[in-house]
Image (cartoon, one colour):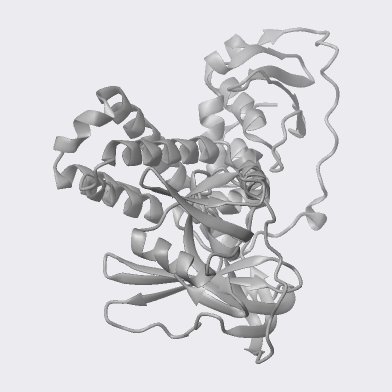
Length: 425
């Protein structure tokens, strides 16, 4: 049977699979390729130590591959077909193929196959643009790293803004905004450290995105969120949420390119689950909702998809006038560090996790401030002196509960629990 380009396109599950298949079809990626009257086969090298074994039945183009890609046919199968189409002379003819070449399992019958929704097709089209943008971003990161990050202080504003615009064109809006913000880092004393951290983050994002099809749905959701793609609130409201008593225990806000943002932290009294409500307002417009500190709500919270989900919306809620006590917090700082390590294992793109730490004291040493637990373990407290002294004053010299954001190096405090009160810091 003659294999045509149109046949390969018809087999592909989406457009991005075609782009990846073309990259996989290159001769350098294949340890062996063979054919006979019944099968095509090949052994494709991965970026690591894995070898993927591909078998294609020629008559109906049924196929198999031992990779973990959930889309069928995978990029290795399509890549072998593109490879055969481009240069079939490289395929060694063998009447008796290797032992591992066995007939592929039959594909799912068409009437049982899932129908792709319009929004999924739109996402596939966007993914093709995003993948192209990620490849460009990866090359740019390599260039500035080879040039030396220390030399970037002299670059013009246009250097950052022009490349950020290319990322926006590639549907990587959040990445573009992040790069536009790089020029502001040079105003800080530790700009080189901050820039190195941001470059490392973008490199990690690129490596993850290039393995997109091999990741779980939650990991894919984390990458899409980092890129600037979010699930619609209307879709989330059809999902089952977590019913609980929710208490507002922290809030931060800021402005980015005339877009005001506000992040409100809540904790569930029974579940101990943390949730973030994100609100935005353009220009001088106010936020549509207010979430006062220490206010409480009975309601069902639905979380956005992700491997370590924290962003959420209320599916339904009502005010709760009853006091919420005995909230679950970390008893030791070691528990907080362990929780951060587990969260990073799920989503390496995390900057921080929320932490409510119980029964700790504040100490000052060598002009640095620390949180100390009952086991005399300590972590840095990232706060200006005025806020530190406010915490110490509220504690009255006694142990106190502190809520904040932990980044693996220190805690930024957002509130303290003094008696039955939650007080913003």
